[in-house]
Length: 438
Image (cartoon, rainbow, N blue to C red; front, side, top):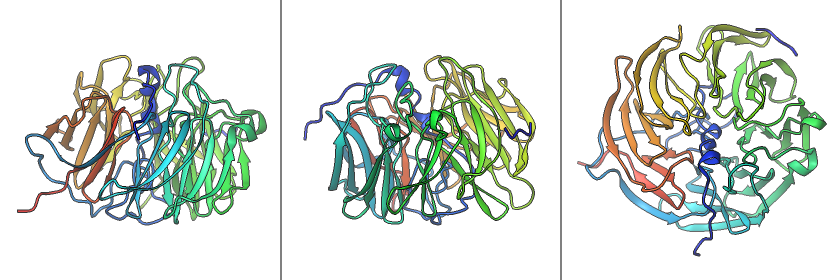
């Protein structure tokens, strides 16, 4: 497998486009080679401190929920889009569409009070469906907020004030296509670089690194189109690398220089997407391992890798073929929702990492996304139901259930300091999921 080669005007999402939001979502067990240490109270980017669906080690969750579900600390109306919030530096960053503008808002994480706002015009209309809001979770790092809009507008703001520092129209600069549903690969910050799966295939700008300081282009690589999967960071030797899934390939590249170490084909042409994030497991000893997965008959591939290539351990469609729910790597197992949102059934599975054997399956579970904290999994299902689950390779162990939303949830939730931030088409809620005082 080694290959070099105010009332808000909102437009309702369509089912087809919305179901792919999680491909922006779900994640990887990855050792961050650069960036801030994980601490409770922060969820600064897609799927948490390390972009892997795992909360900081000192995050604490209740072992059960009240009969009527987690208590709502605050809530507010939101506009269009499927971008989950980011939470850091005592702020919640909301990215949504209000009428003909993409809007970034800094909210007080404790109260939901608006602190600042920045916006710019958008004329985005998707190729498929009618949903026209942003998809990508913001990034908060080093006193900066980074957002990536549906038409490829990359913006850097000051976290405290919301003042715009720089902005790039990446699709105009690199001739990138918007894809079926708009730009949907969340940026990643590595040191002083903002790296984005732009998809400028004709200009060898599939992946582009911009300066965090002023937005100038540092490097461009690959003729690959963009996907709905977000890059993850892994340390290979002493160097930070990215594993990125593009429209048709999986690539390992040096994060600082863009030098490609290896790549292999993944995905297929036609009405398909690569939407789940790569899952990287970095042990203390030995080679890191990688899991990639997609629906549409593509399936999964799991194996070990180094800077020279990847060696397959198992693969195919039998164990796992997830449309956008990236599995959680917990202990020696993967926990994942297998299947598609738009074509039921979807099953909740526990899969042995070493062999790909399914340890257990909860059939017809329904689609959704996963996050892990304090020895527990929070499942957020598309239909608005939430579950608190104890990961157990012998079977599904449900600790609590709730239905805090009447609508459909496809934006990724965020977890910080015992607060779960989640949204449906209309409302963002901050829910208390920490232990109650005795």
